[in-house]
Length: 168
Image (cartoon, rainbow, N blue to C red; front, side):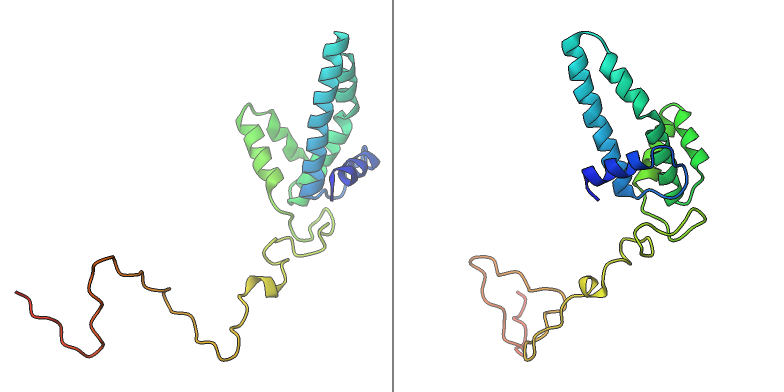
């Protein structure tokens, strides 16, 4: 989902408090709101009154609440949990942690909007999680990597099977 799709999705579900909102839908909407707030603030500073900013913020109040509730549904929580944001400082931190969380599998609020199991690692095809097999005829890689090169001026290591030099 891109910015345009997210804005159109949120605005088409203006006051829909049911269902689920994917993480990308929520965060692209959040980005659009930030951009809109900056633009309206610039316009207001030019005209000298906070008219466009206030109208913009009042206009997006209901969609903000709706997409937040749908995002809570996506992580398996009731929409009433957005009221945690009313707790000074800690509430906002808790909401941010929840909002960045991944989608849950199908739950009481509907099927997973990703269409998968909800876990990013399990949605990746197995071919991407395993290294490719070695080419036929190639020796296996060393178990612990390659040994470091010898320091300059050090004698070469003894051949295998030779006795160690005497200690003086």
